Structure formats: C-alpha cells, structure tokens
Length: 180
Image (cartoon, rainbow, N blue to C red; front, side):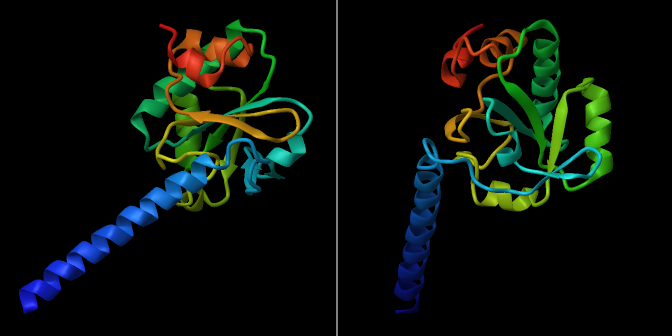
C-alpha cells in the first residue's frame, strides 16, 4: 500500500509540475501582441528607467548575463552590428546580473559601449518568464514597437549579420536567425 501511495504521489507531483511549466510557457507566449510588461531597470549610472520611458521608437532589447557563456559572443556581435549598421531601432542591452562589478567586467571584455540597463530583479524576470522568454533562458531578445507593444521574442540571433538585419529592421528575429 505504501508503494502505491508513493507511486500515485509521484505521478500527481509530476503532473502538477508539467502543468505549471506548460502554463508558464503559454502565459509567456501570450505576452506577444500586448504592452511590454512593467519592470524596474537601472542605467549604468544607477538611475531608474523603464521601457515606457523609451516609448515612441521601436526597441530591440538583448537580455544577457555574465554567467551566460553564449551571451559574450552575442554582445560582441551586437556591438559590431551597431558600429557598422544604421540602426532604425533603440538598441538596449539588458543585464540580468545581480552584481554590478561582473556586469562591468563583461562590458569591458566584449567591448560593448551601447545603452545598457540592469534589471532590478533579474531572478524574477527569468523565473516568471517575462518578456516572452518562455524558455526562461539566456540570451533572449525582444522587439517592442513604437507604441510599447511586445512584437516578438527569440534567442537565435547571434552573428553580426543577423544583428545588422534586426537593427536595420530588414528582418524579424525569426527571419534574421535563418541568415548565415
């Protein structure tokens, strides 16, 4: 009897976890086409800022962290693309680091000199799968239109050419990820 109760308990817990994950994914995907969520960020000089304060211009935001190995190459390539391409969007690199020093070291290592924000609550942003980050992983990229609507989310834009296509608005994230 104990084995049966244990087996049923494990099955029930597994189902609850599965539903919870599926619900989180569905809720995250449902954010596309809606106003971008309110979340607190700070500029590098530690001033509060939000996506709402940039409303009026399309935005491409690259979410990264110093503990994310692929984020280094992505940030380097984003920097190269912004140097070589006329940007039609506001490009913002959003750190999900907790530590300011680690963020600064990453910026130095990658050479990124563009606009950088740091999340006030990085753990929450990942755990709650904000900004249509349904995988809950990094790097993550979003596009926000000039009205503050979350248009697209993804993670496959990596190369300088792919970034150039996105920031020039010649390709969506999906289309750019298919470029070489």
